Image: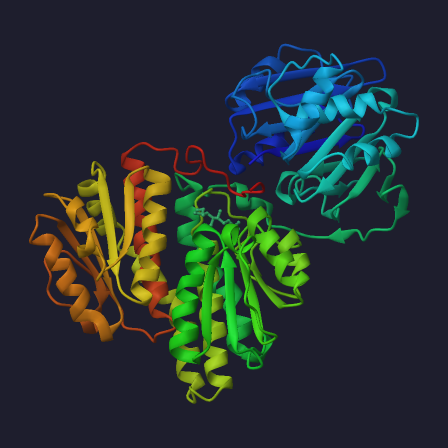
Length: 592
Ligand code: AGP
């Protein structure tokens, strides 16, 4: 996803903007650019590819006189990956960076072209610059309001108006943007991580708000009316940006899991009443995207099997448009690492509009979803830099599991709570042992990394685990992979099983162990290269077996997850993929 940053103060602007832009690289991008302004001029420098290409151009220029600027990493939506389409976009006196999508851009552009306006780029962002210049008046807040009312879609804008080159303007609608409050200097960015190196004080803009910032002052408007906003002090762990000796952030974050599970869970294990009471609900709707949705699939199995509450898991991009059959006893649980996923935000807002109670499970503090939901549980995983989620996903599963344990206990289905809490307390140690079998996962990766297809099969909660295992492999190694209900494989997809096709069967649920084992044999008898991931008590002596310790139903899935994360990681390394920043992927999908 695109990232925007801005700075105004006494420092050399490019010495703030470039490091900040690098902090947004994890969001995924394909070009970058910067605009530096003073009272006489506004220089724009852009490049395709990585930020290093932009730096090479900057190094050739004298930029010391610029103390105000905006910069951008572009994840192409409208228009090809070219320098012309990179941001900042400029028209007349207006220079702008944009994260989001303008949905009615074609109509607006056609009208402007009929007025003989000539466009240089294919972007929707340039259209915004043209409109701001067209309606430019001395009261720039009025200009911005007028243009905002013409636009449909999502936008976080950083704007320089050459007539006021001692100010920056920021506009928010659906796409995230945060203001960093400095000492005689101010910043803005798509998320805290880009500017938490310079300040720990932040103002979060809400939709349809405009900020006018100078070196000394921040004024926030809703419409043309000045409003007051809180300044939040947020101390984040900035050493998240240090790989600490690991070759990739992803491997570091996989290895952090035991510790962050302990950090997050301990307070709840000491006092489970700190978790929300869900006994008044008759139905749960878990709504999310990608891995977060797959975490929800594990949650569904535990809520239904252990707490006997009907639980639906919905893809947020579908949920937001489907007719929802709620009743007043429905709780909507939204899950999001970034807290800024556009589809999940839309689903949350739909639920709130229908007066449903909402609970968020989020990693990024004070993110849009964390602020919008009625109640929020944080996964406390610190910053997750690798685009492919690992530690945040595992924490999502862990919190859902604890919530289902509490609900099962509150409803009387479980009486010996201490037994289960003890197992959770052991979880970090269990996980360390699983992660320590590193060599085994590397060996498997050596066998599978040249495969064309890889399959993960399981039933019930094991199928839910397969979903994320498959997604992790394909999103970082680019190998086609599918998770399949084990009983379903023979209804078509088994035709893809060739000699040597890797098939991972996951069996942690004793009630269907034999069934899934038969399904695995169905594939190996057709030449598949089968792997069985199972527990000590369910082990079969299968040729390629990975055994995890027996644990309670609530903890068991969490012991399998790192195995699949590490197999995916080592496979991607052998394929020399960009493990931390896989192609085409963005860390936070802030557009539809
Ligand atoms: C990244 O590894 C995930 N695979 C991706 O699907 C992610 O889970 C999804 O985009 C949702 O992101 P969120 O958790 O920030 O809402």
